[in-house]
Length: 230
Image (cartoon, rainbow, N blue to C red; front, side, top):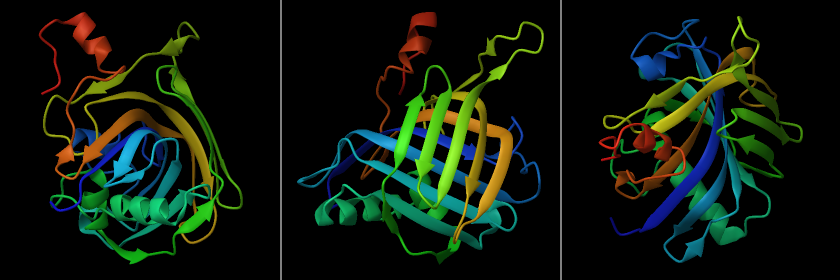
């Protein structure tokens, strides 16, 4: 690939599925149609010589049926603090361009979207704690979302569920699972309440998913010395 880039984001996603999202278990969606809102903060990143660290982003998706059947709509929201070069870089990455075919979630989802709404440049207020499974998102005039952990009905305490993907994923190697409530207005309007949410590190480059240790996957390594990202 001629472009060399890195995109490492701590990301919160809330979709309309129940807490057995079909995307993660190779199952049909809960309601027969899919809608999802991703919001993240780039903890390390660049596109060629353009730095991206510290910027926020969002990607809003909506499909009339299953994702694999296509006809989806996508809208990208880029942190208003980004300069022109950073805006172009983030647009390129989140559009699923400048990478190996179908090598990350942006490229896969782009292949299923036939309607592309205008990119927005807005303040993105994101507070997310991946380990505690909490999130608060406010994009003025576009999106509000709250994320929380699943609560154990017997003890009233947060209930820990996580997904580990040593291989086969185009999105993450490890994700914490919770619940989210989201309202989106505008071109990709959606609303979901107390539905599937996951908190993960999106770690991509021009070749695809980067599989190396992070503060989330370290938990697995501590539980089992042979558990290593490959």
